[in-house]
Image 1 (cartoon, rainbow, N blue to C red):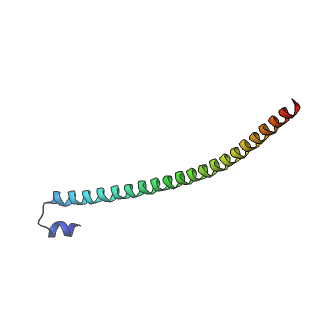
Image 2 (cartoon, rainbow, N blue to C red):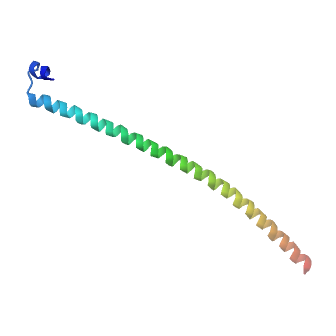
Image 3 (spheres, one colour):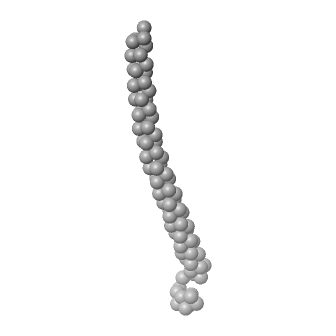
Length: 86
């Protein structure tokens, strides 16, 4: 580092500013990567949860449709019985 200061003709402020800038870029880049990974993990978890909920709701829907058919059949049988007993 001192060799660079001695060899370069540039202002030392520029050299230290350049180092600070590069360190800042490195830190921000790493922060960005960390945040990206965290968001990607959260997205995967949410997507998985949504898929599970969709499957659960589809099962519930088919169960409710079966119950609805059963109730309709029971109502039809009840109507037949009422007609017969009149």
